[in-house]
Image (cartoon, rainbow, N blue to C red; front, side):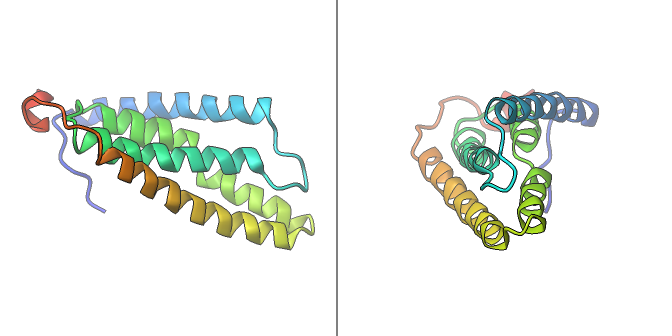
Length: 146
């Protein structure tokens, strides 16, 4: 996958991803602390976090980055950083492993397949909503970010 050229210096993008990732990770940790997944049970909190994050990423990319001339910091800070830290493949894989190794193979399979399907549907719905948002008047994205 090729990352589009950005008017931001590499170090700035790196910092934006780091700060966004820290905030996203803390948000996920807070939600899992408030509503922890019970051992041996379907991991509803992690499932919901990944579903919400998939929808939010579709909405962000289609609705704000592509159509509204978003500033250059939005994609690395909110997309890669915040939503990347909020939704993690490692939490998804760990939850599936805990279910499977705990003798709950059916629940593990349902979680893996259900998460994939809900993630794709969520992202698709986010994109569908995003493309319906009005475009923001103004200069093209490259000029707006200087």
